[in-house]
Length: 559
Image 1 (cartoon, helix red, strand yellow):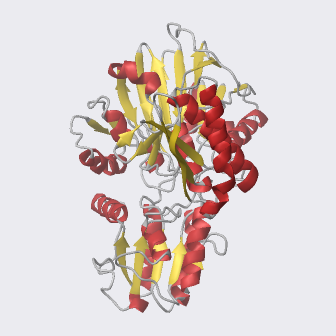
Image 2 (cartoon, helix red, strand yellow):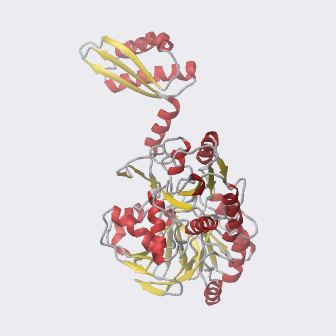
Image 3 (tube, helix red, strand yellow):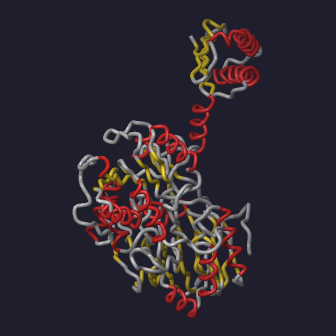
């Protein structure tokens, strides 16, 4: 198993007849999945998703893949293949289309239906769409793509086998091997086996649950737990889930129908996605169950289907937990069912929401105390099964944090895969004469969406925001005579976010004046130099006296 390289140079020119693979997101994190395939001078992209910000990304709305490595080759892109409709696979599409608006988008019927409102929101009308289904074989430039049904936590998910003159690359997308799925659509292992018999040169496999032994529990197994929640709840029920988890919403609708309750959707994305799913036949709504108003029935007969299962600050459930939701006010005795997983990095935010709900007096049912969620990703046993069926020559674990990629690579090695590659975002993998190798890397970082700004926010900006939030802010202003350097006024110190009286700075004033006068006597008149003197003296004092390192803004005014 080849391990990750700490330092890689730019890749060489791609030899004729070779296939190049560049992951621009999804390797090293759960989110912003995007992989670029290059052959014959053309590019095919698989997925283009977003990563949701964590606590150390203050003010950031979304995180995108870095389009920099392909920005000067946008005209070479023959299409974007979308494996399924989750945000971490489709959320970045509108931002890529802003760079070239007519890139063809390829995906299943439900996936494209979920992308369509995003394009309308961004006023993107040029992109042609191609609906594909399992069993279809379509050609886009030099890439022949065969689409294979896979089971996931959203209907209509597809794996894609990409066939070129360099060989066959099979990308699973997100998948698991649920043998009793709610929609009856299982992962097509016969197609995997057939492709394996013909020869899979590069197998890109979902790594999310590679550390989890055995097989992922079937979605049907949570139905009794959901039913038990409904049977024991005497007041209103609020169910929080991903707005794209149609299977989970179906289970809630069925339970509500069984127990004589009405269901109202809360949250714009939940309303929109369920309407799409219903219109396309992926969501089957019992007659009279779904209502438009949250108070259409007495509380003990109502269910609210809400977003916010990951503790997102602006999502419906978080606002309910802190009593800031404009429509929903929770009461003691209400039941909140959090029917979702804990995405790594979101744990603290989720537990804060649970604490807030509990403080109100709500009964909170979540994965930690009931079987109300199952994963949509293959566990170790399923991955081993796939490796033995496909018997690929080369394996590239994708979709996961570093530990997941390593665990997946170890599974592939155990089954006898000759060559396992562990890569990160930006690594370049070339498939030449049936052998895949890491040949270099391209610059590839996080691109932050901050309001209407895309890519303007830097890691330095985020560091400054964290400093402001954690350590506070201090400004220091002094006025000097521009002719002789005499201090005319100040220094004045103003602090925000520091729990100290103004008198705490009394002892540092004379030291700042002394340092300024000494610097001026030594010939320093440049305001930037004098500002640095003030910053250094004040920063040293704050670190020693207050054990704080706030942001310091020194200002020198010449009069």
